[in-house]
Length: 203
Image (spheres, rainbow, N blue to C red):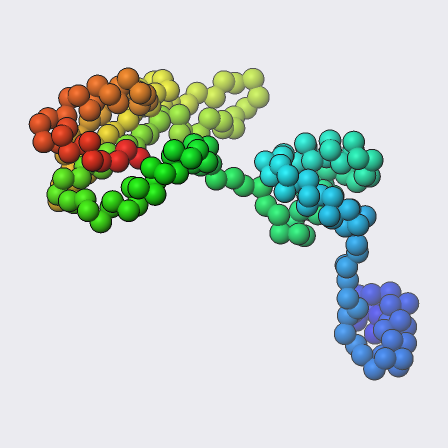
């Protein structure tokens, strides 16, 4: 039988003994070990609650300073077990200012009084030629040559106004958008579009 299942005779003996003692032929549960870091779970969770953007290396440094033993990979597995991922959504810090909060509430209240025909929403998008792959494989000692549009890294920006019924004032910039360029763009907008931009939104 051992030869048939390609296992050792002692394995067959253990299977038969287990079946006689328990009546079960199911495999024993595997895994289930407990990490030594779990007894410090409260410390780790409090640490990232106080400073959520700590990198894994920074957590390890803090752990070592607190004299908690454990490897870097063990810390990573601890966060996985506790459903902690490393991510972040940035929002403007000005949202916490009282004047900005008041202006935001006023904007929400007044939205219902705005005439959609007078609104112009300014929207911007950009593409960069450095989005090509930066590395590849070739024989050691031979330079691998890649190619990108225009032969150099550059950013191309597109900006336009969006009305309720059409797009207006399209603008293509050979480079990234900045404050002075945006001001000049607004100045170049013609007549009613520039007037309506006062009621618009740049995002």
